[in-house]
Amino acid sequence: MKINLKQAGQPVADFAVSGALVTVAGVVVDTAAREDDVAVIVEIRENSDGPGEGGDGAYLAQIEIPARRYVTHHVPGETEDDPPTETQEPAEFDPDAVVVTLWPAAR
Image: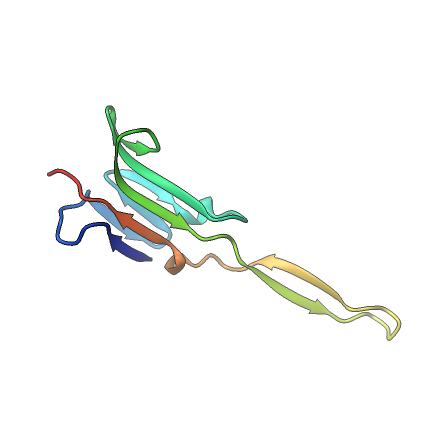
């Protein structure tokens, strides 16, 4: 997982990374479960009722989950007259491709 600081040297919300799980200010995001065929961005914000996903409060973090990748398998035809076919299956999730950007947070 790549961690970016929006502003170097500034305090940020408490965060932890464990495999595909990202925790920011107590909000846990399972990035593998959120993977989709398009890129997904999860915003963690400090809302009036506390940290949570989305809302209109100050940013604490943005988690960028890249679009799902696929592996293509080439299957030859059973006879010389059968054309080959291709199948696709999702590639294994790569948590190292996820980017977490942390915003400065009041302490």
